[in-house]
Length: 238
Image (cartoon, rainbow, N blue to C red; front, side, top):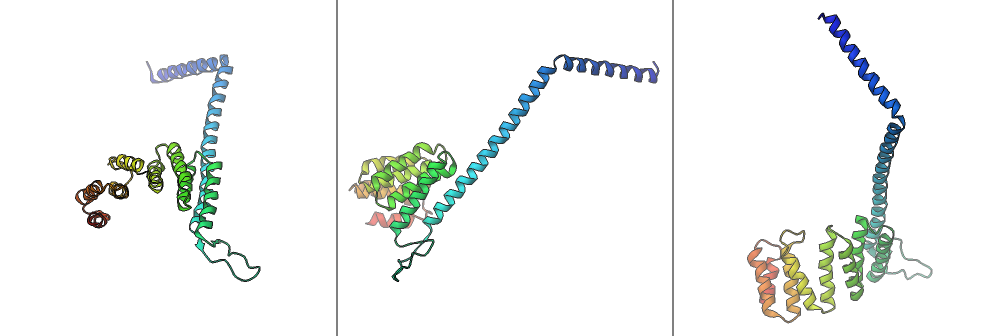
């Protein structure tokens, strides 16, 4: 077969294939157009979801940032001149600053409860309650943060905060059980030597001297290069 004839045959085969595809599309035009429409809707919806999530996270992060600015605001004595007002961005007492920060964190939680900023706000709100001496409220707030933080870093951090609330309320057995569990999580995000220091001090406050010394000794023996090693030795001596 000559080359020209082979080329002509291939062209004919291609034309037949195109005709078959075109015929199938024409016969099933509604199905084809429907499938394309569904695909386009899915793409648009997915893009809209990611845009909305990113936009929401940006707004939540901005609101959290405003709350953190309050936490870092300066303490300035109230003005003594008649009619003078507190300088913007300052607070007359630490209590006033913590109360303002608490309100700001609660605003983040209310508006964006399921964002990373919302998880952070729960943790910091509980910390503000601790600073204000509202320990029972702080305990509930830390537990709420644990329940809502999922697998984020704020879950173990909130558990540690919950232990501090237990200690403040003199619920030493609960704190000891919690710190013991956290100290066993070697692959967790929290520094085990730091958790052991909290555990040892809680044992000491509970009057369990032997357990306290044994815990501080673990810090010295297992973490000799730890920043807490010297503190642990001092605690053992006392």
